[in-house]
Every structure is written in structure tokens, then in C-alpha cells.
Image (cartoon, rainbow over all chains, first blue to last red; front, top):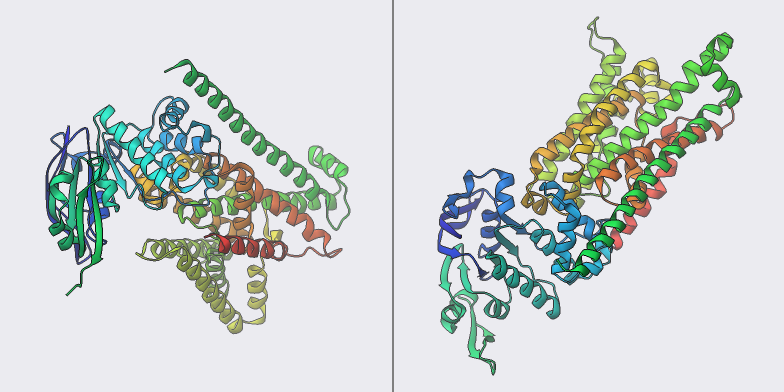
Length: 255
Length: 353
């Protein structure tokens, strides 16, 4: 199973956000992080893959053009997770997952929903109202909603933004575990380069709607690219556990 | 699955079922309360006819004097039932509106649907078409209906505009209320004495316009639309979790919105066209229902309809008791009660981060 993107373009009216973007096959069983500065087109690319933006070009999953799939079928295979669950919704945790499953027409709604919670270690929250949860717990619930539907591709829009350190790792660990276990593909927009470096198999660097670089964290993370894309002077160093870390020293003057 | 996990599922299933039963119980409880309220509404009135005699009269009409028959069949019963149907229609429309516009302040009244209907009706009253085969009362109803639908379409267009947030939508609704009211005032200014009276009377929402034909139409509209509402309920629940999320779960939100808007227009337009502007039921009903049964639209929609019916039925009782011997137009009562609730909602919303 793999996802490939060929000359994909998205425009909002006259403003082109993504131009002729192509990516080599993204293989199953891997986590791909989309990184890049604000406005690079990361979220738009993700939304286009999810079928939420009108696009030109070809996106194929297992060799099949996804634009030929029905809306429901496409959403069953490529599951998209927006940034945050909205506040002020009077639903319980388990209930919100059952509601999601009911629309996608699954069987054994309760069992599947509960299992999704259990796998993320949050089954004790089943009866809590969504509004009583912390940001991190809510994000795990959103992830459970996604995983309960058993998709082939996970499209995650900044899954860790606004989360504390504990939940950043829990969310990313959970995604990684599921990706490996079910041989899924996860594509995540990540702002935290170090989180991307530690959890992703591949990094795709976007800048002004185009792919600047694409490869493993070791290949991608180097001062030249960071300076060009983010406008910062940065070092890439290995820590005592031999992990890559990006240390940002200062912002470069933009001319 | 391990034994422990299985036990967990069993427990969660049991608790979830209990929750569903509790909600179903609440809905049934509301229906019972509504029944009591309708009896109370039937039993109150200027003629002082008690409930016992009234029920006797309903079940054995042959025993009635002509006056009593008129009181029961032309006044009390149509008033009480109209309160139930209009309340249910407005609150159901309000609940769906709040879901598809993702806005707690949405209701037919606050976003100008009622005012638009009033404008349409006023136009029909002031400048009736000289077509013999369309009765004036039908013209009024049709115009009110058309204008209500137009306002919902306008709101929808606003809601779809890029960058138009929750606040701007409410502001647009308020602007719509003011402009329609201004135009109605202009029509009133230009109207003759005779027409003016009709215009004023129409803008005050009142159950006095109830008759069996209108009851029949509204009952049919409700009976036809409610099953569609309930069928859309799971998708609407998901929509409450966010447009993108719902779409990515395979919900065709465009179609969902369109169908829902059609129902909202039909419900609110029919209700408003028959009884005039009755405010706040469509706003407050869904909120009370939400406090009782939560956001699951499978329960929220019927509960909203029941709460709306109950509120308007209670208002109808109040409208007969406030001034002895006078039936205050029920729109005045609901506005008096609804305004404080509305203010509380606005402030609670304002406090949220």
C-alpha cells in the first residue's frame, strides 16, 4: 500500500497555495511529517488529500485514483483529523465516538468505540463529558474517533499543537504504534521539528506551496535548509542518546 | 480481547444503555408534562368553563349548548393545540438551525426569519394581489412563507462566506431583524386605518388566528418533516464536532445543510405565517432540551420540539391569566420571558475563552 501525489495544485480563488506538487510513493507502515513555515501550504495539502479542498492533479492510493472514489469511500480510507475538537459540545467521550461510527455505518458501535478508547488507554474517560477533559485528553479522544473507523491513511493536522509535553508524546506514540501494527500510512503536519525528527520516518519540507526537500530526518535536517525555509540560524546536533536535535540560535534578517 | 477488556466493554455497554434509557425517559417525561400543560391551557379562559365540563363536552358534544360548543371547538381546543404545534415547530427549527449554523444564538426569531415573514405578510396585507382565486389569507401565508425562506437562504449565503464567523452571522441576523422591522413600520405608516390594524395585529404573535385548517396544515408539516429530521440526526450530531471533522467522516455536509435549511424554512415559515412572530421559543427551547438530554441530536431534536411545545403551552396559560378577561397576545408573553434567558445565554457565551 502506498500513497502517491502527482502534480497536485490547490488554489483559493486566484491565489495559488500549492503548485504542481509531486511526492514519491509514501509507503505503508510509515509516518510522514509535513514541516515548513506558516503559510507553506501544509494544512492545505492535508485537506486536499482528505478531499476537503478542490484540487487539480492526481492522488493515488494503492494505485487507485482517489478522486474516482465516492465521498464516503474516500473518507473511510483516508481519515482526516482537524486541529481541535470544538468546545461547548454536550457529548460524552464514548458517545462522541459512537456518533462518529454510526455515520460511517459500522457494526458493533459500542464495542468498537470502547476498544478504540482502551487502545489509547483512556477507557476510564468513557462517560466523561467532552468539555470536562484537558486539551491532551480531548486530542486522544479525537484520535480514538479516527482510529475506531480503521482507515488506511491517517491525515493529522497539527495533532500536538497546544498539548503539553506528556500528551504530545502520548499522541505521537499512539499514532506510531498504530501505523506499525496495522501497516498504515500517517501524514501529519507538525510544527515541532524535534518531535518530527524523533517520530517521523520521513520529513517533507514545504515552502511556498512546493516541496523543498523530502527524505529521512538525517538527510533533511541540516542548517542550510533550516536557514532557507525558516529563516533561522540553527544547529543540528546529536544528543547523548544519539537522537537528532535542532537547536535554533537566532532569526536571520529577512531581506 | 482479554477477559478484563471484555468486562470493560460489558460495563461500558451497560452504562451507555442506561444513559440512553434515561434520555428516553426524559423525553417521555416531557411529553407527559406537555399533556398536563395542555389540560391546564384548555381549562383556563375567560368563560370560566372548568376542565371537567370541557372534557365532557369534547367526548359527548351532543350535550353542549351552542355557546359552549363554540368556546370548546372554536376557541379553547384550537388555541391549545396551536400552541403545542407552533412551539414544537419553532423549537425544532431552532435546534436544527443551531446545529447547522454552529451557533447557540441561532433561532428563527433572533436571526430575522420571523421578521422577514412578518414583512412578507405585511406586504400581502397592505398590497394584496387582485387575484380573485387566491384568498387574501392564503396570500398572506404564502408571502410570509416565501420571505421566511428567502431570509434563511440569505443567512446560509452569509454563513458560507469565507471569514464570516459566528459573531458576524448573528450581527447579520440582527441587521435583518431591524431592516425588516423598519420596512414593516414604513408599511404601517403608509397604511389606511383599516389595514394598519391588521398589520399591527399580525406583527403581534397571537394564537387567536388558530383554526382547524391551519392546525391541520401545521400538523402535516411537522409529521412529514420530523422523520427526516430524525434521520439526519446522527449526521447533525457529527456536524456539531466541526464541519471538517463531519466531512472527513463521510458526511455530505452541503446536502445535510441544504436539506436541513429546507426543513427550517418550512417549519418556521409555516408557524410564523399562521400565528405571527412569536419570539424566543425557537432559541430557548433547544437550550433547555440540551441541558436535559445533551447534544445527541436523536434525543435533542424531539426533546427540543417537546420543550418548545411545553413553553408555548405554558405561555398560553399565562397569557390568559396576566390580565383577567383579556388574552394578551402570546408573543408578548414569550418575549417577556425569553429576553432574560437570551441575555443569560449571551453572557455565558461571552465568558467562554
